[in-house]
Length: 211
Length: 203
Image (cartoon, rainbow over all chains, first blue to last red; front, side):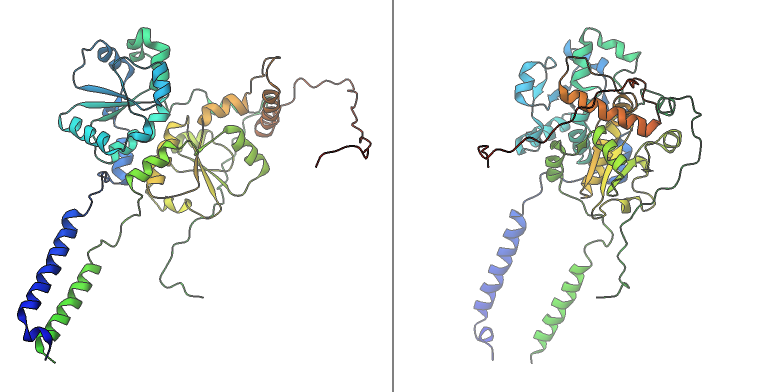
């Protein structure tokens, strides 16, 4: 005979305590602040989404306060921000972007349908944070094409960016093949490219034996 | 033994097996978004064109250049010994198996550094280490290695050192001739070993 068969109350109390502890565990389980909403393929696709970029000519309206529902975040360091920034921009250094209050702010802006534009010294600096926020589901976050550099050099005439592609990144500025051709007048070698010998990671198979 | 106990035991075992099946079998390993942002903020992933040129000339076997431009662009021009994986095809055909090989450094190359950096973020999300971005990309490669600009006469000595390295690298990569080579014999400066004196100190 077991002890709980003699005293069913004890068993009941033990079970209740057990269930309460489990429930308390589930309730207080910390929800991660950020989780990925886009999978890898969706993340790759959104890189070529034109709506994910904020173009220099759109700044014109923002500075003149014509643009509603746009917030600019300068992700450079506070010191550099102090030396010059786009009028009306707020400073949140890249290191502080995932602080809880900043993420909550972004969530609120997202619910309100406000566009958040990230910019750094150049487009490269804001590229990583922008990709990250898009991947965790903030579809209102955009990146300033050309970054602060382009703005600083062309602030007098931002609308001109519409007609030239000098702010654009990712395009070749030279004809590489021609520029890298031998300078002594020899013909550009047109031999087919040799396949590169590369080591790959081995797939681990269950069948692989050995010690 | 009580029948209830047997029933309970079986129930526990069934539940335990059930939890094993909860996790979907095929899921890529990913790092936490917060960890990813910490990695993104670090500028340690950038590697200069000079460094890439140096390693190419030395034939560093641990270097793997991955060109993330489109196939057409790659076909027209590419760096020696580079491999083409367009960013759009990163997840296709086992391409991920090139990353994370122990002892290999993967350097992403694109027209400038944006697309290479984007690919870096994507691979970092999947937790791959030892991946780098060639700063400035091929545009910068053309400006520094293929067509280096001579520094002004009052520039720092290190700039001249960089320039002479780049000139050498230019010859290596294009077969260009040295144009300003002085034919007249240069007086050879011989450095003689200095006489050691007992009095010389140091450690």
